[in-house]
Image: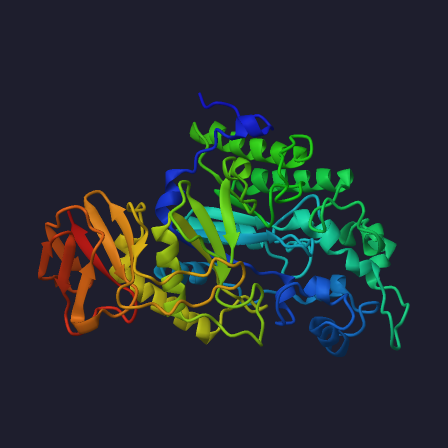
Length: 482
C-alpha cells in the first residue's frame, strides 16, 4: 500500500519524480485562452486596465473604454471555431513532444474546462467547448501524459487593476467594469488591492483566506475532473512568499493541502504517486516536495534532481508584434537542458480561432526532422558525469534566453547504459571532432543519421573523423559505445 502524503513539508518530502517524466524530456504547452483574442501579447487582461500601456491603448481604440467594453465582454469573442486538437496533437507528437500541457486557468480567472465552480469557463462562455477535455482526449491517442497549468493563485492580486479608473483624459475617474457588482464573482472581491497591497504576502499572492480556499477548491476540481499527470503552478507553492529563509506549514497550508490531495489521488490509483507538480521556488525545501520549474531560463550545471524549463516560441499569448525563436535556438536550448537533467516545455502559440500559423508549422517540422535522427540521444537518457565540454555557457539570467554563439569545441553529453551521446553544438573544424573528457574506452562511434565513423583514442583524447556534410542542419550527435 502506498504511503499516504500528509499536508506538511516533512511528509511531502517523500515525493519522487516519476520515471515517465524523466524519460519524456520534451513537451508542448498550449498557453491559450481568451487573452489571445486581440493577438496583442501576454497579460492583456491586466494591462488593458492600466492606462498608458500599449494594450490599454489598443483596447481603447479597437474595442472601447474598459468601463464600456471590459474583459467580461472580450471573453465572449473567443470562439476557437477552427480548433482541431487531434490534428495539432498529431503534429506535436511528430515534432518530438512526449507530454502535453494545457492551460487550465490564467490570471484572468477564465477556466478552459467544464468547471462547476466558476461560471466563466469555456463550456458556458465563448467557445462552448471543454478545451482541456478535448486536449486530453487527443493526447491519450498518442499515450502522451497530460498536464494542466494553473495561474489562478496570483489572480486575486494581479487583477485588482480592474477596480481602477483612468487618471486623465476624457474618461478620468470613470470606474472600470471590474467595479460592477454583477460580475464581482469573476473580477474578485479585491477592491482594496487596487489601492493598498498590505493584504498581500507579496504582490503575487494574497493573504485573503476566502480566496485561498477558493483556489484550493478549484485545483481539487481540476484533479477530480481530469486526473492530470502533471500540474503547473505559476509561482512558488501557494500562498507563501518566495525566497524567504524559513518554511512555515501554516503559511503554505492551502498549497500543502492541495499537494497532498493530488499525490494521494495518484497513489490510490497507481499504487504509488505517478504525478508531477511543477513550482518555481528554488529553495531546497520546495525543490524536494515537487519538481522545480524555471521559467524562460536554464541551469549552468547538472542538477541532482530532475528539473523543468517552460519557454515559448515567442510570447506567452499570440502577439502579432513578436519575433519567434528559430528551430536551431530551440534545439540548442533543449540539448543543454537535457544534458543537465532537465526537461523542456515549449509553448506553441495559437491564434484565437485555434490554429497555428505557417511560421509555427515550419518550426515544428524542423523539430520533427531533428528528433527523427537524434531522438534516441534525448529520450530515456540520463546525465553523464559532466554536462558538456568547451568554453561556451548559457546565460542563466531569467527571461533572457540569449542565444549562445557555440564554438567548434563545444559539446553536450547524455548517457544511456553503455552509450555516451555527444552533441556537436557547432561544426567541428576540419571535419574532426575532438572529445577530451571521455574517461571510458570507446568501442565504436556512430554519427546519428550517417553511420559508423573512424576514430582513434589515446591519452584520454577521442578523435573522430566526420563526413564532409553533417546529417543535421544543426546539432548533430555522436553515439559512443564504451
